Image (cartoon, rainbow, N blue to C red; front, top):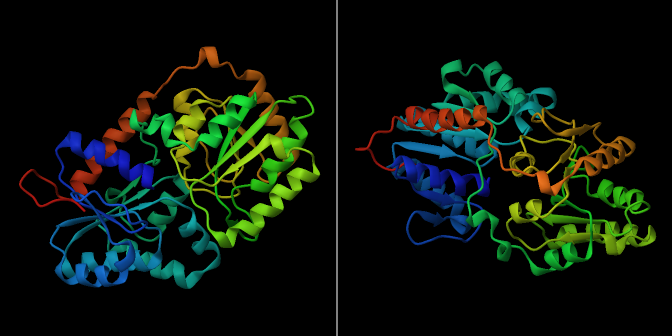
Length: 350
């Protein structure tokens, strides 16, 4: 979501749309249009509910409480509130948590517009009674900028690892769980390394984390111990230091994403855009052009990764944004402007 907001801001600048970004996830701010509310979120939210002046609000947080606050903001203060759904929680609630499902429906019906990153989410949004005119299917991928590709934004340990290994497979994620199973398939990456290294002795798998905390370290330690038991500790890197991921994909032979659920992973579309073969689980709808394997099936994961490695040819890579994606991005910006009721005389979008 951070990547999406950053790239969206660049597009809004091109369109002449003024905005303010209220950062709920970190202390970062630029003293101008990015304001951190990380340490005062509840207090800020209460104040904004009564005194916020922007006529349009675009919500990115994936928390039900924020959605309901947004729905009330639309109903009681007549704000134009838009929401982008990035993960599968709404679909999960429909199947397993009826109370949250109903509360989510109340929130969604108070929105001026809802953007869903995959078709399953869009269908669930429509099931909640959101009109077709207020609903948009739009994967979250926006093309990377030059800044996104700066190698110095990546920790140096990754580049030392990359120089010592070939082929290089990249993956991203964090320690997380979905229905009691390793969400990002970090365990599968360790096993995959052990299987591939027999035929690719210099193989390296670089796993870049987008977030990590001390409480998650014990599980990561167990994975590292498992890699040592399999004799592949030197062939897999868990990089927990934050940094851009696009440069790592660009340096990779193959990108893999063995998640057991997802929204619409921007990293998959980044790999496809850069011409890097992408091996991904079939846990949710995936874009065309990927090597799909059955979710949590290590044999199929190995087979599809071997197939991708055999097709990888760095010399033939070319950046490509399909025309349908170009149109989708134009439709997305148009939808935002229309749902926000934007014109050049209005106050900023937030």
